[in-house]
Image (tube, rainbow, N blue to C red; front, side):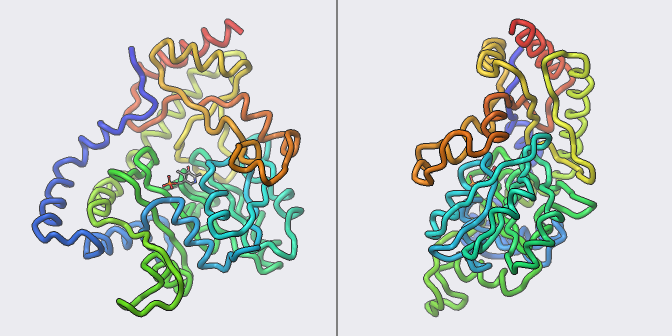
Amino acid sequence: MKVPFVDLRSQHEEVEDEVRLGLDSVFARTAFVGGPEVTAFENAYAAFVRADHCVGVGNGTDALELAMRAVGVRPGGEVILPANTFIATAEAVSRIGATPVLVDVDEEHLLIDPVAAERAITARTQAIAPVHLFGQSAFVERLTPFADAAGIPIVEDAAQSQGARRLGQPAGSLGHVAATSFYPGKNLGAAGDAGAVTTDDPEVARMVRVLSSHGSERKYVHEVVGMNSRLDTVQAVYLSAKLARLEKWNELRCQAADRYRTLLADVPGVRGPVSADGNEDVWHLYVVRVAERDRVLAALAEAGIGAGIHYPTPVHLTAAYAHLGLPEGSFPVAERTAGEILSLPMHPHLTPEQQEYVTGALAEAVRGS
Ligand SMILES: *Cc1c(COP(=O)(O)O)cnc(C)c1O
């Protein structure tokens, strides 16, 4: 048996006919940038995360950069973010000319530690960027009190949590502004690169739109130095078709997570993920922890199972961020868990048989420790 890490083909087959009709119409009109398809998707995604505004952009990293710039992150400023995230959260800060200030995460959920975040505030802090890792939601309500008191905006990295909720409220509407990615493998994936910014603040939404379109709202009137990062019309067609199915697909991910939990309950040496109180997770990734992780990962690969590591190296230990000068030992939880985490296959079309095969192979690999 082969069990792929993700299964984009099965998702594609569900939307294929609908997408083809939508694309025929786009191609017939040769209207490739903007247009009603983009607006329709932006409105639908805003409603999905219960935000007043959504601005589609080119990818998730741009979404982060634009969201940060729109709330006032500037060259020389600082943005607080967790040490164990996809590199893009830090890259967005660096591209502005600001400095990522990394903090450790909590041991149980690997989400930004609110106490560490508060301690990291300086006179230069211009934003806090919690990352909703693995389909969870970060504990934003524990950041808000001190962030608000200090006048520091919260920029959510919601790339892995489309449809997740914290205390009943969707991820992507928990802070002042949120960035998300529609990279094909995300819970809501485009047919290429795409992303979006969501916010309730009309001025922030306007600024994201201006910055993402050459600093101009009206053609050839450039109010600031912007960039070009727009949501392609073709991607909007694809995303609208998939968004209509996202709730069902997230429910299937939850069912798959429940099955993993049952199957792994009696397997010694495998620590499964646990949803935090108040969270409704959407299981972008199903991350277990094991000893001798690299050996276990190799055994799974040998058995035809696509597993992954998210992420093998905390940001401060990458070559790209060596200049931060943060030695090993700076963030003990992020560093230790980076050697233990293992992402099992997780997608809406995972079958019970595949999961039995995965957990069987995992149990065997761990026994060999
Ligand atoms: C995917 C991802 C991004 C970046 O998205 P791109 O669309 O690839 O630029 C940012 N942050 C996190 C946590 C992600 O998983």
